[in-house]
Length: 485
Ligand code: BG6
Image 1: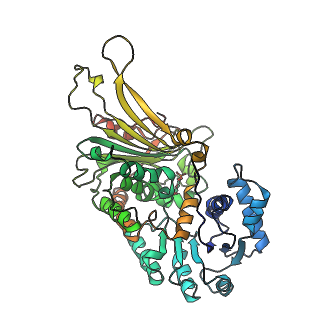
Image 2: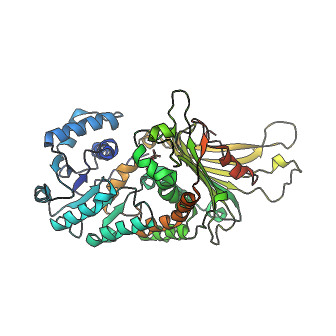
Image 3: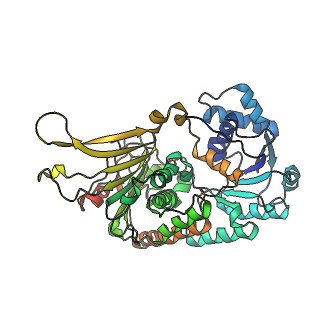
């Protein structure tokens, strides 16, 4: 495979929250990796900004350590690291006051792309936008990047959109959902719309059901305060899972361009039926020897926040009416694996006799992580004598094996998305109306739990979630895929 790294235009990128955890783990190491790959011009500048006082050299040292911890994997050549550090500087600013803004404004250049990454809590978004405007460093071509959570409910999302739009046009606002930057998530679109094979079957006539799973082994330790106010519904379903659902279910956009793609995603969200309590299972992990329970992690033994959720969804449109879509996500599960499985219907009639085992359905599995790839289960004859015995075999493709070592070195979601910001391509970013529509769907569900005082079911750490989640499918003669399959 030939790597085609196309350098971006020179830019000034300011990272507010430049010394925070996301900057340290993802944004700065990601930028370094793009520099290493030759994608960042040497006259680009990256400015770290946060409240604390720091010299340029101290910031560079902070970034050096972040690179060493998170970005190395064979990319530790000292000259490259030194070259990257030369692009960096630091500027202390007070997001809510005027301190530091004049200095920052003086640093910004007129003739290059300007991007401002808001890697801070949403309560500061409005202040930052206002100051960028006040100090005249926003400009028509500037871009702002905002992190999730984009609001806490419909009202707060609307308020946030209104605040940002006071100073920036929608074309300047890049709402990050890092799942959209994952290689295989984009591959979903390539598979669906770059082949004729799947699309004719991609509907309620041929698809029995779809399963979307994002399973994690980690708990919420360390992020307890944030997580306990969100839960799996706000942290994962309203955004990441919703985006996956949109890409799997949307109509073909007329073009792979921002508004065409986002219009189609929006239609899916708007076509989602309300979900009743019978179709939702919420769970919370308990503790085990040497493993803290959810209560311990969030330091509140009365918490009713869910760390696991499984639900059955329906999309009311011509393509999908009647095909359930099951989604599940949770923390402290037995394995870290994310996948989408499209389970096709059985052949309508078996010509091989009435053995029920002979009536199998094809399953297309798109593995998002780890070991990105695709797997299509097909039925064949078991080789050898003994009559017409049918077995299922996987047509399995691991991208790393099929495409060579460079496929194993694919850019991390953040790297790709930041480069898209610089290039001015919004296709993989959420539009304001999408975020609002997703909240409009999620809000009544969350409110109904609050009203009913719903308590999540406990599940063992290292399990597949609460038993009740299995029942969600069993009761309809289906079963979840074993995520280790
Ligand atoms: C984040 C959530 O957005 O996504 C986390 O806040 C979650 O709770 C994470 O762990 C999962 O991302 P990834 O890329 O590790 O699947």
